[in-house]
Image (cartoon, rainbow, N blue to C red; front, side):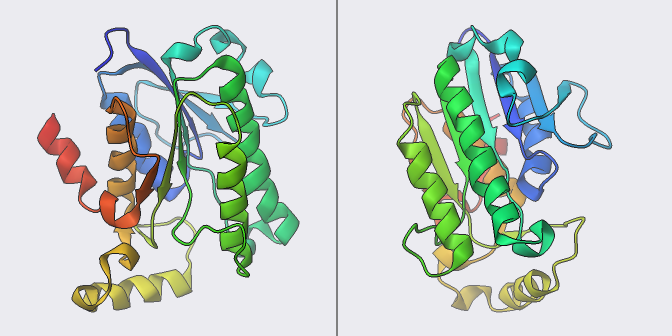
Length: 228
């Protein structure tokens, strides 16, 4: 654990993983500041979380006070949407690729200690599935940046309560809970809190694995609880 408290910058804090991540980071002794980049106000953020309205085209201005503190900064990127919510492929790409890359470029410029990205199982730039293709392209583009350390988490279907009802995902989760023992571990739905906990555990590690597959993150919330 580092001696000087760090700064956690979180993008995508209103999503399923981001909502779980904020209180975990706020309670972590590693950080004396947790900054949530949001497009809309959080309803009830943890006491130690400070919100900043984000403009991904002007991140240097939004985070101007952090420009000389890169060695203390961990960037957690939980950005993501769906084609249905985005409304078009171009709008989807803007969030899942362009905004992620804007954050990654900022992290590289300030010399952030670590960048931790929530991607997805099946991410592959050569995939014929548009969602997986964009996720894979984003991973590859981030890996080309000169960031000090990059950790990519690839969760399977996220299990948790969403504010937006996704019928297909909900039915898949219900079915998978009943058939859990028959589903390969790498493909089993994973609780959002396990993904969030796995991100903090990776941020704590001296040399974290560059890729966190879904099976590796199963049970991370309990692992984090046992370590405190």
